[in-house]
Length: 155
Ligand code: RP5
Image (tube, rainbow, N blue to C red; front, top):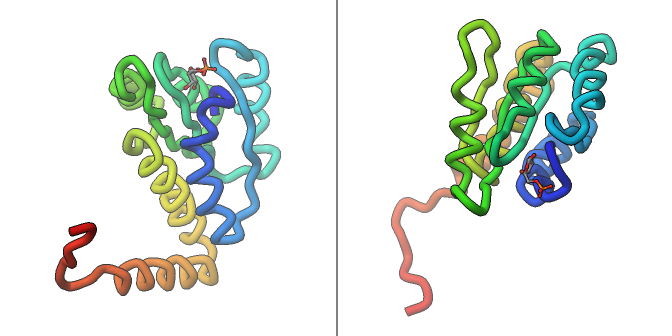
């Protein structure tokens, strides 16, 4: 993520990866404030054995795109909700990559962070039948938790 302030959003990705027992690392790497750290991180990611990078950033959110420029690993971008523009700036910064350097862009905010982790899990599950079974089970639990009819709350 680009800043400590992104953790409130990105912790939702961390929680899902923990739930699935997927080893991962969480780092603050800013495209603007720590450009050398970003270059080192992304350039060495594949050789260090990482499979997918989830990059969350807000505002002029160049982190996912620059990350994708430095690595062939799949990069999933999470637009963090910004105070000024509610994350529309983050979304457009991340999603509008030029052809040739893809970033898989998720929804703004916590839902995007959660789904980035689930999408990373799906990607990992392609080569891991045991993880695929756990993902299927997780989705079945989610399906079973949805009621057929609504109830009135706080009347
Ligand atoms: C971006 O600027 C970060 O990803 C963060 O979402 C935003 C604001 O950062 P802080 O000023 O809170 O550190 O680089």
